[in-house]
Image 1: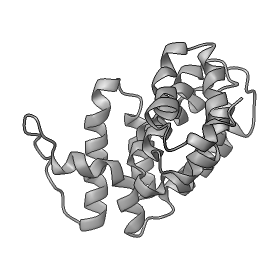
Image 2: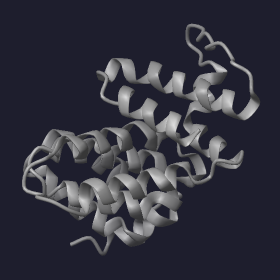
Image 3: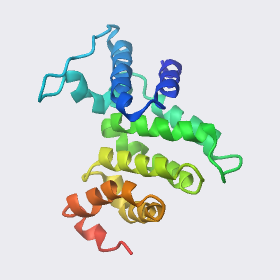
Length: 202
């Protein structure tokens, strides 16, 4: 299961933005099949509404872990982090590093309640990516995906709010437009949730 799912991610996470939702839906059908043994056709989305598949998509990896394949994402993060961010020249982005960041961007919205569990590892990877030429824009996008997935009730996000904001502000020097959305979430939309923590941001 893990090998099949990882291979799918490696081949589909690099698609254009417009095609990513379709790829996530296909990934969800694969997970459904592994869980139930049945192939469920893609649900149709009615105008003004959302399909059952679309509603479940935010918890695809959560469902996978809850049904006996709990090591999938853990192994994926460990393998790619060691392979692409622990050794070698870090001055210029490699193909593997670029792929890994795209995999994170693709999968983070599917973690469900496991987002906090993987939050520290993902943050470490993003921070490493920020120091590598060619990964700054992807770092912005992965930060946004992680913050949105974690939500204002995340204990990990609350505990590391200053660190997250400081890293986003560092990226703002290169991609100011691309950090507006996550900063807006943290400092404006969710300000009441982080009222105390915001006071300590330098």
